[in-house]
Length: 268
Image 1: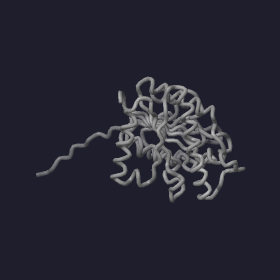
Image 2 (image 1 turned 180 degrees about the vertical axis):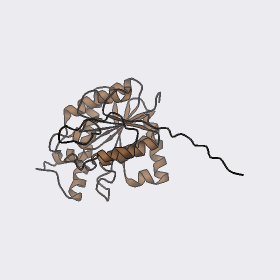
Image 3 (image 1 turned 120 degrees about the vertical axis):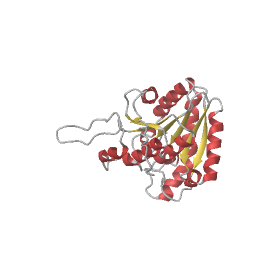
Image 4 (image 1 turned 90 degrees about the vertical axis):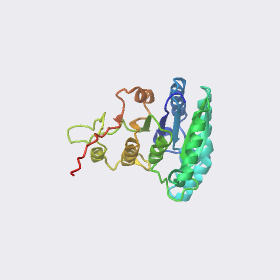
C-alpha cells in the first residue's frame, strides 16, 4: 500500500431507492467512480456497505420490507449477492473488482478471529485493483444489526486497517445543530469534543436506518479515540468523498485531538 487506506461507510439510505426496497443504480455508478478516483491517486479504499436487505426485497419481489428479524435475514441472504453484483458491475467500469467479507460480532471482538480478519484485509489491500466490501453477516446474526447499521462495524474496521480517515456517508449534511423556532438546523463543520456533540442528537433517523446520528457519533468516538479522523457527510451529494479526503469543508469533521501529557511530581 502506498498510503494508509480510507474506510467508507455507505448506509441503506444512500444506496437504496426511496422506500428501501431496491438498489439505486445511479448511486452505485457515482460512488464507485469516486472510489476509483481515490484508488487512482494511490489511496486504498475499504467499503463497509449496508443495503443487502433492500436488494433482497427487490429480488424476492416483496411488496414491502419485512418487519420481523427472520424475514430481514432471509432478504439479506438473497440480497447480498445482488449487492455485490452491483459493486462488481460498477467497479469493473474502472478496472476494479470487489472482495466480499461478511463479519459477525465474534469476528471483531474475538482476538484470534480479529487477527485473521486483519491479515485478510491487509492482503486484499495489497492486491492491485481490489476493493474490499464489508457487511455484517445479517443472515446469521442472532441480534438484529448488532453494529447499528454498520456504523460501529466501520469504526472497528478503520482500526483494523489503520485507516487515515473514516467517512460515514448518510442522508444528512453532517451533524446538525438543534432547530429553533426561528431558524433551521445548520451543519456543524468541526467537532473537537465528542461528548458535547451528543447534545445535538435528536430521535430522528432514516426510515430504514437502525443507527441514526447517535450510533454514528458512538462510532466516531470509537474511531477518533483509536487515532482515526472521521467525517460524517451527505452521501447523495457529488464530491463528498474526495472533499473529505482533501480536507475541504464538507460534512462534519472530527479530528483526532491530541491530549496534553500532564507531568506528575512524586513527593519524596
